Amino acid sequence: LAIVFGLGLLIFTHHLSDSSYRHLLKQGIAVQAGHLVLQRPDDPQVKQSTRWLTKGQSVLEALKQGLESSFRLSESDDSTADQRPELHLVARMRMSGMLQSPTATARVMALGIDPISEPKVSQWHTQLVEAPLTSGEEGEPLKSAWLASDDTQGILLGLPLARQLDVTVGDKVVMTYQGKLEVQSFLFRVRGVVSTGAIGPDSMLAIGTIKGFQTALNEAQALHDITFHLSQLKALPDLQTEVTQLLTSAQISPLLEDDPYVLKDWKEALPALYQFTLKDRQSAMAVFIVIAIIIMIGILNTITMSVLERTRSFGVMLAIGISPPSVAGLILIESCLLGLFASIVGIGVGALFTWPLITYGIDFAALVGDQ
Image (cartoon, rainbow, N blue to C red; front, side, top):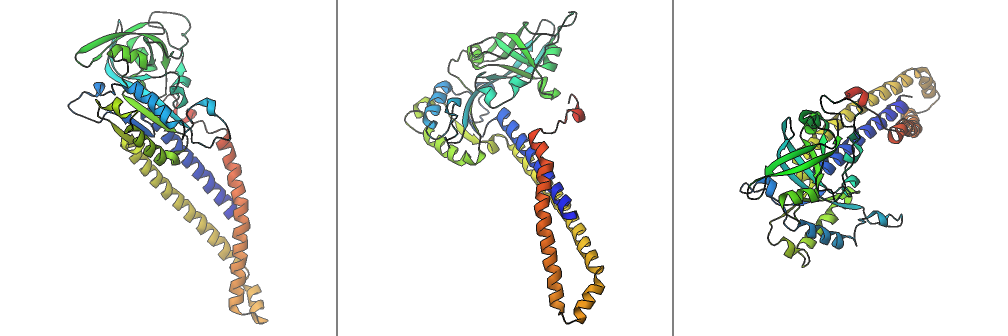
């Protein structure tokens, strides 16, 4: 029983920790960068908001054509016989500035997305909530709508940001931002409200469409980031090699001749997240080692008590001529068989404990509330 339940607990704890780790990586990488990201390099001489790939849209299409022979890029290729790793290419734009309503102003970090490809890698489309009415109005909250790819004026706001600006679905907001040569303004219309549960980021969150941002910046082809999202992380080295070759090919190299670029993997693009995951894994391993030591001490105590309670039996065995090494061998074989069968049952118990975790998950909402 000590081995069975100890091993079952260890398996359950490991699955919970490993799943949390993978979920953190998946969400952090998907939202902030990608397993690979193609972008302009950091340059203090160039404002971050204007570090875009001038012909990014054409580069994106050329990359899709070049990678489709090695990776499964579209849902139409969803064949079970297709062994190619699944890959999503997602384009993004970024703008920072001031968002102004008739009653308030707030600083925002706006993100331009493709409403068709973005839901394949992130969860913003599932985090739409009803938009509260503006102060002084009465009635039911308004339903939020996801953006359309050709909607150049639509924008989604974080829930705290919408409350701060006192706007709701259908209201107009004006964004003032740094263009390539001068400060510019652009009119957006609120299509919905998003709540990720993180109040700080939501207070600065504004999501528009790539076409809308390109229109605002007067750059029809510009993209800040081209991100690559894999279903299998082990395929990352192959993807990085192939993308590097494509970027220097005759099809894509001319498109980038006016723009310096850098290709980063997620560890380079998100160093803070990578360092956090290393510390998280190290702390989890320390916990597992402590649990394993506690279990081993319990098992050792059980075996020792079993041996001490059979002192008379061993004395009789020695008295009739069985050698001390044979008695020691008997105890060793008995312990090995006990460990073998208990481990088999323990793995089953661990799987039984873990099954609802994998099937249904654990809802931590009751513990963290709105945070």
